[in-house]
Every structure is written in C-alpha cells, then in structure tokens.
Length: 443
Ligand code: GDP
Image (cartoon, rainbow, N blue to C red; front, side):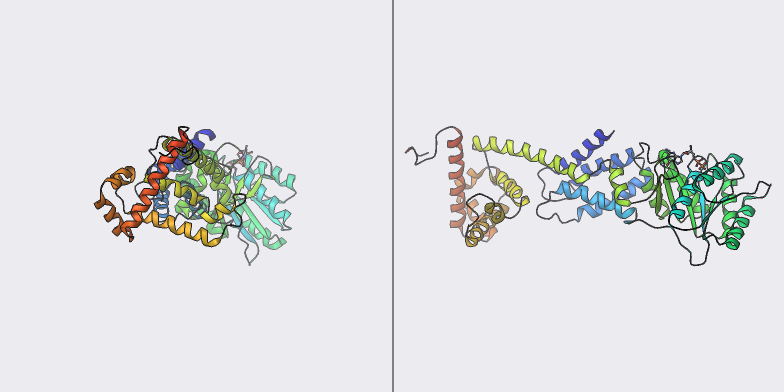
C-alpha cells in the first residue's frame, strides 16, 4: 500500500513537470492524486471533497519561491493544510478550576473506551494527579470487571456499584465520592453499543446532564474506516463532544478518521491509542498524523526524489537537443529556471573552483544580460521560441520582440546571433569537430 501511495505522490509532483507555477489549469491532476491518497486513508468522502476544494484555493494562489518547484510546493501546501485542519498543535485535556475535572468517555462498543479510560487514569496519575475511574457501563457487566482489573493494574481506584442503578445515578454518586474524598479528576466509562443507537444516545445525554462534564471524549477505532464520519456526526449532534481519542493506531490504519472527526465536529483529537497495554496512549500531534495520512514518513524527502528524477529526464532530453542543434528558446527558459532553483547565478558561479573571486560587477552584468534575454523571450510567440530561425529570417519579427521587451532592435539581433552561434558550437562539439579556432576550422 505504501508503495502505491508513494507512486501517487510522485505522480502529483510530476503533474507539474515543466510548469513554473501552480495554476487552475495544472492543479487538477495533482489534486486527483491527493484525493485518492485521502480516500485510501479512509477519510470520508464528503470530508475529502471539502478538503480538496480548500487545498485548490490555497495552492492556486501560492507564490512559488525561488529554489522550490511547484510540485514540491504543492505537496507542502497539502501537508500544511492537513496540519491546520487538524488543529495545528496538540490540545491538552481540560483542567477545571473547580475540582474535580469531569471527563465522560463515549463511543461504540469495542472502540477501546474502557481501555482508554484506564490509559488516561494512568497518564494523570503519572502527572501526580488523583483520578477516580467510574464504571458506568451497566449494559455490558463484563466492562465493569474489565475496568476494575485495569484499575488494579495501574493502582487507581475504580468506583463501581453492582446494584441495579441507572448509569446516570452511578456517575453522580461517583462524582460525589470524588468531591468528598479529594479526587481531582473523574473519568466516567459509559456503555457503548455495536452501532449508533437511540438508547445509547439517551443514556449519554442523561449522564451528561447528571455530571456536567468538562470533557466529553469520543473514542473512535481508527480501523473503522469511513464510518468514523457518521459516528462522529451522531455523537456530536446528539450528545455534543469536546474532543476525541483515536485508538488502535498501532495497526495498519492510516488514520484518516482523524481528519473526518476534526472536520465534522470541529473538535480536536486529544490522544491516540497505540496498543492494548495501559501505557499505550500518546498525545495527538497533527503534524505526525498529516504525514501518516499522506502515507509517508517524510513527505518532502520523497518529493525531492521525484523532483530529481524529473530533472534527470529533462537533462537527458536537453543534452540530445544540444547535440542535434534543436535547442531553442523554450529550452533556454527551462534551463534558466533550473539554474534559478539552485540559487542565484552569482552564488552558483562562486561555487566553481577558481571562481570564488569573481567580481560582483561581472555577476551583476551577467544577471542583467539574462534578465534582458528573458524579457525578449517573453515577447516571442511560442512558434518563435521553438523555431529561432523564424526570427533570423524576418526582421519584422525581431522589431516586434524588441519593442515588446523594451530593447533596441540591435540588442535583439545580437542576442539572436549569439544564440545561433552557440547552437552551432554545440553541434560542432558534439559531432567531434572541436572548437572553432583551435583547429583552424570555422562552422
Ligand atoms: P470498549 O468496548 O469501547 O470499552 O472497548 P475496550 O476498551 O474493551 O477495547 C476493545 C478491544 O480493543 C480490547 O481487546 C482492547 O484491548 C483493544 N484495544 C483498545 N485500544 C487499543 C489500541 O490502541 N490498540 C490495540 N491494538 N488494541 C486496542
């Protein structure tokens, strides 16, 4: 799966081959790859659509700065936008001024709710807090035993009443105990169902009213795929959540649920579960999740690799063109862009051994000359760029280029003559004729 995704992003980068900027016209192909990657990561379809529209707007308006290629920039925009959408930074657990802080755990059966309750208990204990775990899952009696066992394991007290009390009554009594006995946090484990169910929602609402929690954390299994969207929507609409815990990220899920949860509820993912053990809980970091959703540890390294492949292929084509003397002004512009990506012309020249003392004035005049040529090429038609001989043959074309670029016709004549001379030289060198003047021969 990883390899397939890698290819998708390489394709996204290559979609910009030869383009100078991200535009409405060239962004579609790359967006298609992102769409596929997000769907593969199980982000829900409606969220994918919304995200793609946002990225399109951001990407098309983006300035592509010197040294960065549009393909590279595009992936950067996607990555940054994913991080932004997921909240940018880690969001800590609520900490109420009025003790105790009450945290209600919600979610479907099997999501990892009971486990997450114990994991949070341990985390708080390690921060020198005094949590109380409340077993309010009366629907599945085994869940109470499970929490009691986990509580013993982490040495955190569990409040449970094995009577026939309603879950909201158990929760309320748990809260009273916490207040009386100086617990600073109450974690209430509630009953899930296998699917979204009105009984469950009613129960959640009643518990919420009874204990007025500071947090309602929705626990979602990351392996559940596209369904995460509906689960989030239901819980958020009916109960109202303040955040989420995404579990089972030690499996091979790519974590697309994180994006769906955040987009649909607007609430942050606060923790991730990364194993069955009670220690396996980590704060959620949007940056890391963005890389995971995109399916790569380091997006940019990969993009750079794709970029290099494109450049190598370009260089080979360029070499062939030089040898066959078909190198034209369009190729010249491409080469200039490649040089610019590597830095300023002066910086580049200074890296060449023996050139480090090169005069800044010389560099400046070289750069001015290149700017002049670029302006002239900008005033040429595509046909003229691809066939410089058209300009050589027709003075009226040369005059038009001169006035369009703000230079004298004589300047254009000179640039054209130099260019053609260069083409001739290249051809001669590549066919083994040597440099003119060295063996006495002229082209
Ligand atoms: P609940 O019904 O929502 O309370 O779910 P449980 O806490 O009972 O968890 C259901 C199953 O998922 C159990 O077998 C847990 O050990 C397992 N589980 C929970 N969290 C994780 C996790 O982060 N990673 C893995 N691999 N398994 C988990």
